[in-house]
Length: 88
Image (cartoon, rainbow, N blue to C red; front, side):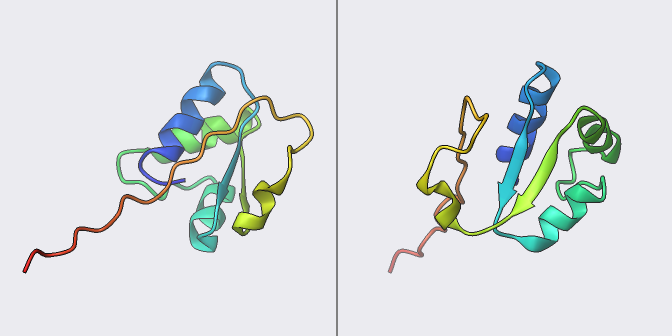
């Protein structure tokens, strides 16, 4: 639910899809569950609108991806970009 995943989730919600956001960062999930945004360019009103349309955020580990959750038609996984390693 970072700079790629959250906007993507909100766009899917705007198109009428039921969206569950997943993140391993409990603080991000707590903010989203409270209707707050963890991303500066995503306004609180956008998250609150998505919550009113059924968006939810959950915390967990990568083990949740071992099966097809009931009712899910699509999965999108956005991962951290690798950090640059200084050249020596």
